[in-house]
Amino acid sequence: MSDNAITKEEVFEMEHDQELGNKHYSRCSSAGSTHTPNSSAHNSDDDDDSGDAGRGKPDVLSYKERRREAHTQAEQKRRDAIKKGYDSLQELVPRCQPNDSSGYKLSKALILQKSIEYIVYLNQQKMKQEEESSALQKEVTALRIIQNGYENMLQHQQANPGPEEERLTDEAKFQVFQAIMQEMFDTFQHIPMDNFKQLTGGVIPWLEEHCKPHILRNILSRTLQQMSQEVLDKQQQQAMDQETTEGFS
DNA sequence: ATAGAGCCCGCATGAGCATG
DNA sequence: CATGCTCATGCGGGCTCTAT
Image (cartoon, rainbow, N blue to C red; front, side):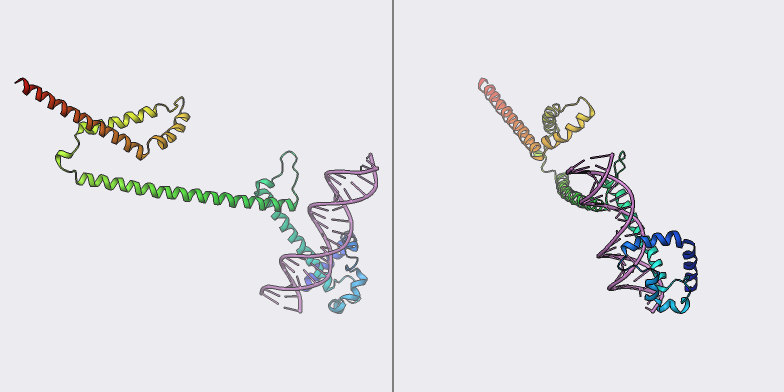
């Protein structure tokens, strides 16, 4: 396997010695002026492993050279992966996307910074939604408790209707229903209804404002008081009429 | 218009660590 | 121990901005 590698390297070296090799070393010559080997430098430097096979054969790459070649390719692969990651980030993060017109590309530092800002923003949104969800869940629980209470009251009422003489007549129930509906209608007709949007936008606030249990209870209480007063008045009137009749007789 | 400064990016390489 | 991977470093090149 190492033989194959060496052969490949040899071929590579022979084919690209001029163009790539010169470019390679010209780049490194400045960068690696302190450390980059040229041929003379590492012939004396790393002849420990290549020396046996390649001593006197300049075509055969030394171990150090082979390792450097492999490393260069690996490093290129790594840089590609990093670049791909930055490109993906720029595609994923809305604030990182370049303008369509200019097509300018953000720097890597900016991509990182914007990505961090976006993640923070998403975390805040998540927390906010969790709080809203929690509040709504509590509201649902409370409404279910109220619903159960009313259902229990209804069942109890149906199971124990009470003495015959204490039950409300259908006439009385109708009066109560009529009074409640009349009062609700008086407020409901103030909802703007020029279009469907206005209607739907007005119904919810109306429900919240005028259909609260204590308001309905007040209406009920007031209506029952009125009915009670009317019965009393009626009874008094009947008594007076009776007295008058008896007086005449 | 142009030279120079500053910034960013890609590249090659060495060093150090992990792994089979 | 060979190999792969990551990180740091130094350098060249391209681009933009600014002072002259």
